[in-house]
Image (spheres, rainbow, N blue to C red):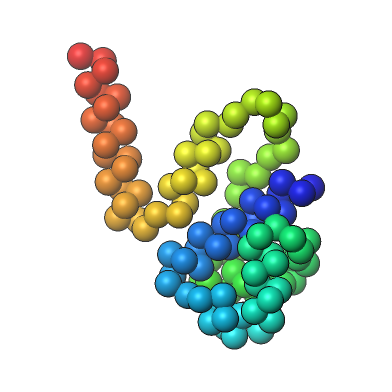
Length: 112
């Protein structure tokens, strides 16, 4: 369960920074305490669904996005697609499109 808590917290942080919000501003918008926001982002607090929903609303992000593609995997095996998803989710839509186009070009080039 600890990894899920960390993953959700990291996603909250990613969306917060993408929206250029401080922890204090997110706390104000969500009705949560700033210290609590920091603890959730670091995976130190096992937040309630109600709190996460308030945070998601404040971030204007569907609640499902914070829980999308979460898995409990064997720590010794890397999940590259999940790592790519986590990386891309921190980027703006324009950056995501650029990165996708780069991957398509690389894939096309390797097949030549």
